[in-house]
Amino acid sequence: SIPSSHFTTPKQFTVQVAENGAESTIIAFDTVSVPALKDATDGDDGDDAYTVFNTNSAHAFPAANNGTVTSNDLLVGATEFRVFRGATPLTYNASGGGAGTDTYKIEETSGTNLVLSNITGSFSTVNNQRKFTPTAVTANTGSATFTITAGGITFTSVYTFSKSIKGEDGTAGQSNAI
Image (cartoon, rainbow, N blue to C red; front, side, top):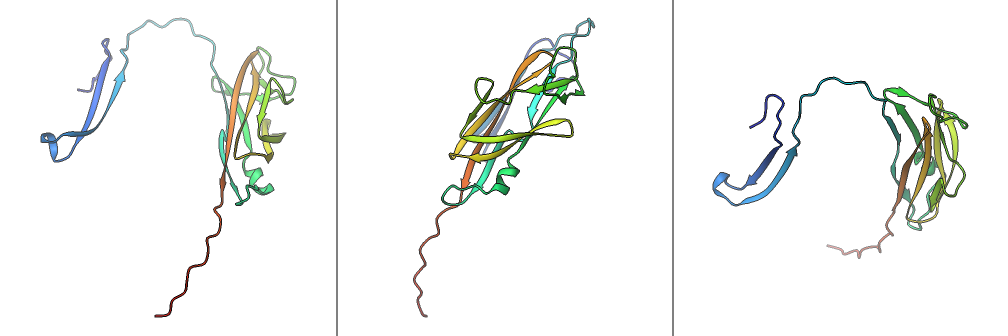
């Protein structure tokens, strides 16, 4: 049964699917575990958490059958970074990201803190947020790992891509008169 109030013993719920009702063999099931909850007294408020993400963390580029991606399709693969402290959105600042500031920064020099695999790109600032726009993808899959600093804390955000390659044209079928 579904609890109507907090509980102190973990609960496990199982849903089963059978053909022809309960008399049949179960063909599928799933189980969800819900941890126990405990009443607690209100303590001191902690620091706000940071949330760091990019708006397009996985992208599939349409590609010609030779693997070529057009410059217009590269533009659509762009991703913007968003950083929040609690509910407060932070803004990009190239020298920001220090403790107690409402800014973040992204390492933009390829190497240890910016790892590019089969992709190149450029950075720009849009509405006080940083944006990475691919300029070339050199293989069918790849990634970019970004290092972001906010509140004096370092985070990573990963962007992955693949190509959706157009198939080859088939041979023409034989024409038959009826």
